[in-house]
Length: 143
Image (spheres, one colour):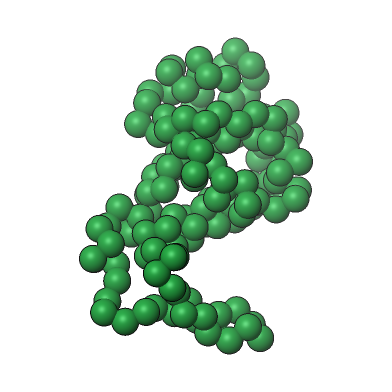
């Protein structure tokens, strides 16, 4: 793959697909299909009777997850970070030189906040829509 290739990330809180476009008129080819089942669970399946904790980062200590941070929102954020890491890996491997993000507004915001500066610099277009269930031909019409 070359730096001129474009990756198109089509995502929502529990599923994402990455397509490869080698040029502006090329057919989109699906190269990754990622599922995050925890984001689909009902709130009651994700939480217990006591506040959870995220374990904290190095030197930060543990943090109690308050009622404002629902377990479902936490799982969506975890998935956004996982996708951001996948995109960063693709960038460092030289798999793409441009990136298009397609996601519903709330998840698009989580994604944007999770991306490294280097990946953000490669974003050429954003589409505020949930197209993850759509075939590649439909997704292509938004590019």
